[in-house]
Amino acid sequence: MKQFCVTPAMGKRIIGKGMAHHPDVQRVLEKGTLVIIAGTTNGYVAEEVLASIGQAEGFSRLGFRRGVTVAPGAKTAKADLSGDVVITDGEWQKGKLITDVAGDLQEGDVVLKGANAFDADGIPAVQIGHPQGGTIMAAMAAVIGRRARLIVPVGLEKRVLEPVNDLAERCNAPGVTGPRLFPMPGEIFTELDAIELLTGAAACLIAGGGIYGAEGAYWLGVSGSEEQVQAAAELIKAVADEPPCEV
Image 1 (cartoon, one colour):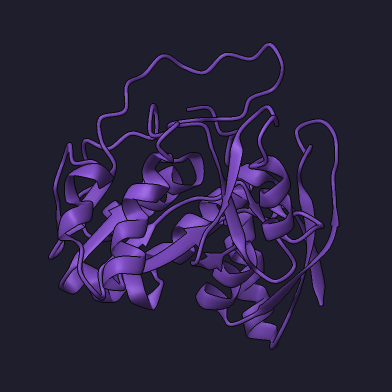
Image 2: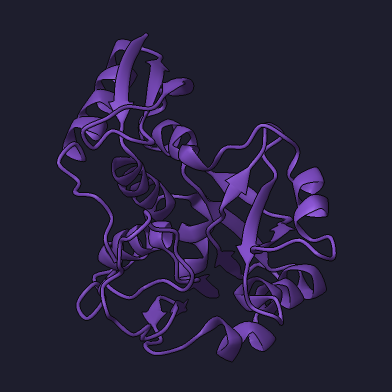
């Protein structure tokens, strides 16, 4: 086993590369609709997916977000959301939002939605500030009502100790301030999954934290054949210069 330190920005890029090779994403790019709902991690996913089909021109991660968490005193860049990324039968439908297409999504279509938390059982949850539930509620009509596929790209820094259903019950109680929390019925896809998909190596979370830009970083242990571990090392090295995420 070899160990590697990965920052959250590096992790977002690794997740993006992995999602572009996810078999459900590859399938729906051939036929069907893929919706990448705007979010910081999904910005990397959108870059990698659009690049894989030769349609990256015109996309920018700047502004590809809705609610964000920033350090006290920090300000986000001034940019308008130009749309979620909606790809139908391999063609990017520029300017479309999840709310524009949710009613048309069918069984087998794929929705990618980021998360703010996931627990030890792999159950993800998203914070909600919108009084009507935000983008996840638009997606749920297709996911629950018509069996569209929900995949949740989420970084390891979002892991929580308690079950998200318990946390949601506490966050959503009357009288509580701050965002609500909604557990999502989707498959999480973390850096661990991306490394395994892209290299065949198995990765595990060993430790976390750091300073000088490594705040929120984590140590991964990667094991497998010599070729698999080397491939994982090359993947991690290739994203080592990923700058902090500022969108």
